[in-house]
Image (cartoon, rainbow, N blue to C red):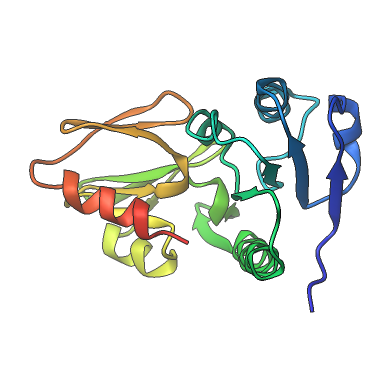
Length: 202
């Protein structure tokens, strides 16, 4: 049984519709217009949160590669089979439970809470790790200690960096590009490993 607030969107839905409290959006996608609209939802301050999951239902495969910019959960090809729909709903439920996890750090005289899904990457300098989320948080700990608190969405790229695989937009032999434009140097020999991790990620 799934308890997921779902919003079913017809074509030509305005961004204002996204103010509804939905966690998963099933969007009928027939033209490139729908992809453009989804990109606007993600980038607009009045649009949807990055915790909301987009599922495209489409009979066209022409623009699927471009749709990665939207960070869609899945693409369901028409006609939609029941077992495929059930599988996507299972993944949506699992992802929602992961997004609820929060890391707590004591910094000085205050407690800082960082939702795991907001972490883009983390790097180490000396005895301190900087966690790059909505804002940067620097704590005294090892990268290994942080890694143990994270889940399979995160990948250790060398000795000094942990990267959120869901934030990656492009990987080359020399660097990783995140969706916010951040470029992170890729250690020698790490290219195949991070690509396998991205492919195997649920």
